[in-house]
Length: 195
Image 1 (cartoon, rainbow, N blue to C red):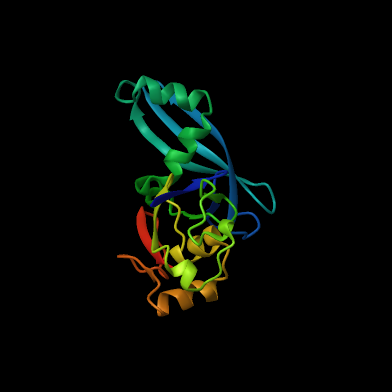
Image 2 (cartoon, rainbow, N blue to C red; image 1 turned 120 degrees about the vertical axis):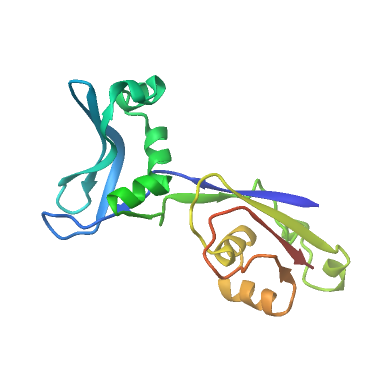
């Protein structure tokens, strides 16, 4: 049976960038934009506040662009301070590269297992020949956003195990996948848990 888990963002991630005022390296974005027009040229920034001193940093979204070259829908979303647009822009590699920022996703995501338990602990089965007769569980993990996380952590959280127990299952060949389970990953993958 194939179970589907989803890694979902719960809020916008912290922006890692050095603060000019206090040398902190973390900024919080609320999804607010600043748009400035100068004749036919437009600039737009995503605003971020330093988590220590509150200093505002502007992350460049549009720079000296002709107003007619900007899609009206994008312009409306900028003026409406659309938090969905802020999430999209923070995940855009071009925006991150232009602003020389990285993202900190700690505490900004959750794992939704849909109530499934690949170990079938809900049936009260111990790890014995009775549990082994069930065969295996296939789990597909989908990412709703590009959140870098180790699959070992996801498996541990989704199955209610410690990371050491998950590592033991990998070493025993009872947990297999085509991806490296102990390396950071931000794309969809599947794994099989043999009972």
